[in-house]
Length: 200
Length: 200
DNA sequence: CTCGTAACTTACTTCGAGTAACCTACTGCG
DNA sequence: CGCAGTAGGTTACTCGAAGTAAGTTACGAG
Figure: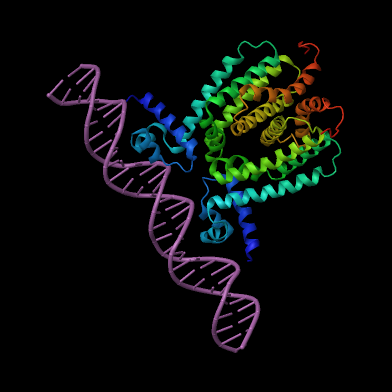
């Protein structure tokens, strides 16, 4: 089997087992066995157990970024940006329930570099939100814009975890809940600027 | 040294080392050495490495609950409840920066039962917020109330992590940021009920 | 002064991450 | 055809850390 294909297969299997049992409780031998290969192959391709975990996270991160970027491409107003971005996020989670637990909760603790990888996902999100906000209210305090983005990301992430326990709450409703709480606050902020003018 | 005192000391040392190096990178021998005791003592009192971690989290959780409960005791309006609760939370984090990283980021990944312990902290918080909300708007959809509480907790938690990278943002400002985003949304919700009447 | 027990230690076993060294089958080329 | 080089693979180890068994010391009660 060619390398690229084998690597992809390893990531898929690892993601699944990590999500099932947790990072710590999973042994490399077990993953190797389920892939149908021997342990040194995993080390050949990923360097370490940590490397394998990071590989899983990185792949998911890339996928999430692509999905989100696609979703918000056509948005016209800040509200639409936010709503479409949130929806894309919740839909992504919905389709990756298993690996989601891994990404957020498993990865964070395990290893510093995995931590960074997870933070990278959040960074993607906060950057995007910050950029949108700044584009509509150019004179906003940068610190406040950052805080705002963090708040949105935190709220969204947490609600995503919550929806795992509430299967009846789908991506659409989750989006509504988040928008319902944060949108009035954002709108109030935006209205301080009557025009989205560039007044430098 | 009596058992209770020794246990407290172990928790303090463990919290510190876990926070410094991460859970995985810390060995029980190392903790034992820094406590000035041998490894089996740790096992005697905490059963396992995981048990020790859970002990750390549990202690912090108890402390946080007490501080928060005290802080909101005198609140008269929902806004005051929220504000005082948030402030107490951010102040707690501010005073426990080191162990905070452990709680959230280390613990979550490491072990399922530590996970539960961390979720317990969030449960405490969401329950409290849910109760406040329900007391002021008795006819709110229970699901929406839950979602709201999760959103607030997620936003707050995330902002707490963020403030670690922004030392200039103290508890008071962090509270303002969170209130600024979520309060308008909550107020809008509350106003749908002109009276906090029981209309069953 | 000796019995019991709380607090503690030394010296293991076991298990899993990571590695060294070796194997095999295919692909291109004289 | 036959042989060289390499991609993809394996077996069989080392080593470090979690967890444990069995024993030791100090000290207060009878």
